[in-house]
Amino acid sequence: MNTADWIEIGQFCHIHEIAFSFIDQLHDIGLIEITTVEEHRVIPVDQLTSLERMVRLHHDLGINPEGIDAIFHLLDKVDRLQQEVVSLQNRLRLHEDF
Image (cartoon, rainbow, N blue to C red; front, side, top):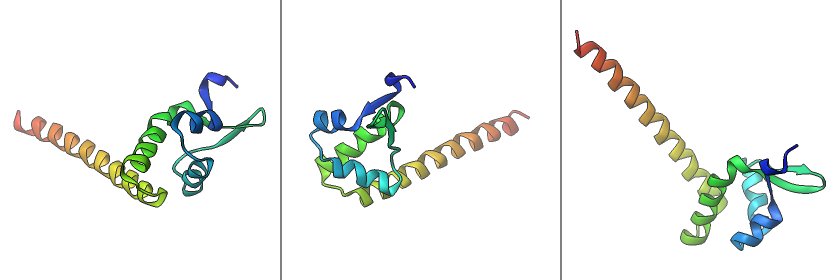
């Protein structure tokens, strides 16, 4: 397994000055994936952007993990609705051309 694909939780927590328990709570809710590689708890690098956004919501706005879960659920729903709008607009343009 390539170590460039993972970041150690301890390193992430140290850099972002957050407690391990916050990461564990996010994992318990299902917002992030935690894996063990060579006896180190790690998260996939492709989740880093989302995790950093969660940390900012927690630090800057004081939002708890359950609130972050609700926010991410709503953001996902908004993204899906925006994709649907674009799809419908494209279909409408096809029919307008005739």
